Image 1 (cartoon, rainbow, N blue to C red):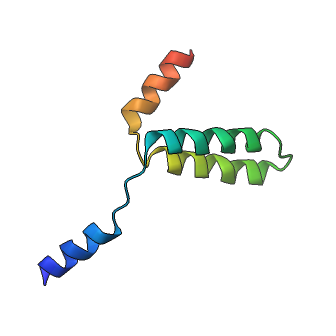
Image 2 (image 1 turned 60 degrees about the horizontal axis):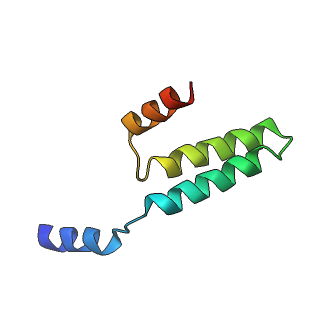
Image 3 (image 1 turned 30 degrees about the vertical axis):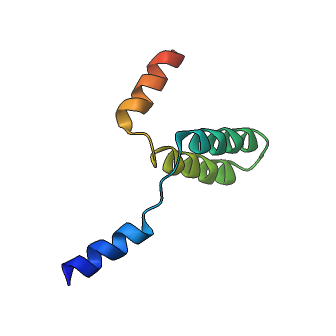
Length: 69
């Protein structure tokens, strides 16, 4: 039974490139800058964070913040 579960999990695995994540996050950032609604902006920021963490971890994010400062 566990072999079937592992097999199903492997079939659902999708490799996502960091280039694609960077592009989508960048587009969401640009979109967030154009909206007036704070609620929509918050949803876009949540989406950016969720997408970012598909390929990056907390350490990468901390490095980016340090580089920006």
